[in-house]
Length: 276
Image 1 (cartoon, rainbow, N blue to C red):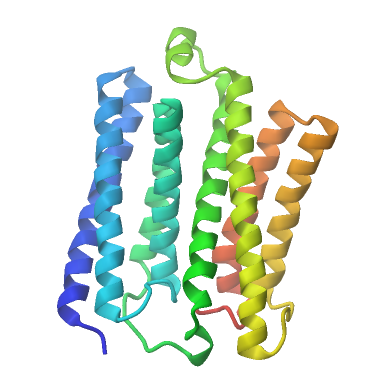
Image 2: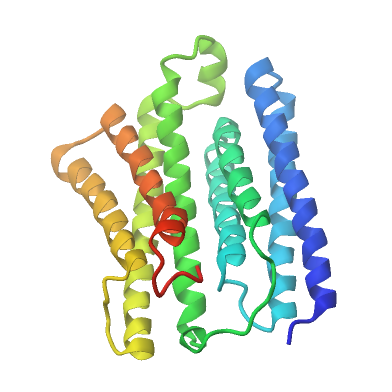
């Protein structure tokens, strides 16, 4: 039985999180468009604060629901946005790359906005979801999607960099194209590692829940397609020396596949994973 008090608190925290992410996005935009460098640190601070409240909202919802908040469209969407916010903050702070935040913030806001449009009702878990594998399987998917989201943003930055005119601003706030390419490669590597964990844990879980490791459910199939796309990216990069524009385009296309795996499959190809 869901605790309504906790769920009301979660709703307040979720709303404040959306406001903070939106404010961060606006400041990031002003930072890039008007070259107001002092706004970059404020934008990162707002995103970080939003991330902390986002974390609190997920924890409170988990307590209120009496389970991990990872089992329906709303919960996975808000967790997806959480994962992207986490990974983008790590990369922004690690590489002092605030422009990355300017491109990541709209994606985060769109995903959490999608979450806001989903039903927030708490339902009893279906039998197949009552497993210790739930937390590991879904959390690795969240980190994987977050990392792929960052690689998508870096791919966009790489493709747009040559068209940006103010080179002095770019030199201060965007690394050389070679470094952007390397950071994107690291994000893809992180994402593929965690997607591998997701698929393996999902197969083990499926065997215990339904008696089969693989059933070619649409979600399983498109997760495999996504894995293959990014595996090809890494193969071409390591074995054939792929770099630059081609790799950036691959990263963008890969994330489009990620979005279809999550949103498109649930919308157009319902299956045994339709709850998430």
